[in-house]
Each structure stands twice: as structure tokens, then as C-alpha cells.
Length: 72
Picture (tube, rainbow, N blue to C red):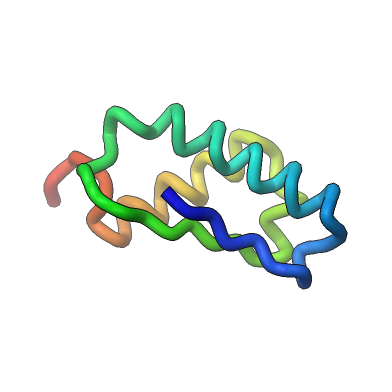
């Protein structure tokens, strides 16, 4: 799993906090994910989301990408 959080998101503190929060979200979703390599990116707006909102967004992105274990 790799995380891409660029400078437009904010300073180093903001980027690192968002990266840690995304890692926590992905660890909660881990059992639902298919095996493979993933790159999770974040737009500047992601830094303003609550944990639950971030979790919904990341989960939805995995669903859209076909990365969740649930088949369509």
C-alpha cells in the first residue's frame, strides 16, 4: 500500500496527519480488500474531512476501483 499526499494538501504536519489517518482507514478496511498493490492519493479537500467522511470516501474509491472483496 502506498499513499500519495502532495504539497498542495498543506504543510508537512498536515500531510503526515492525513497519511496517518488514511493508513488507519485502510487498516480497518483491510479484510475487505482483495490482495494486490494499491496507491491511495488525496486531494487538498481530504485534509478537512472527519475520520468517518474520509473512511466513506476511501471505501467508495476502493469499491469504484473494484478493490473491495464484494463482487458487483
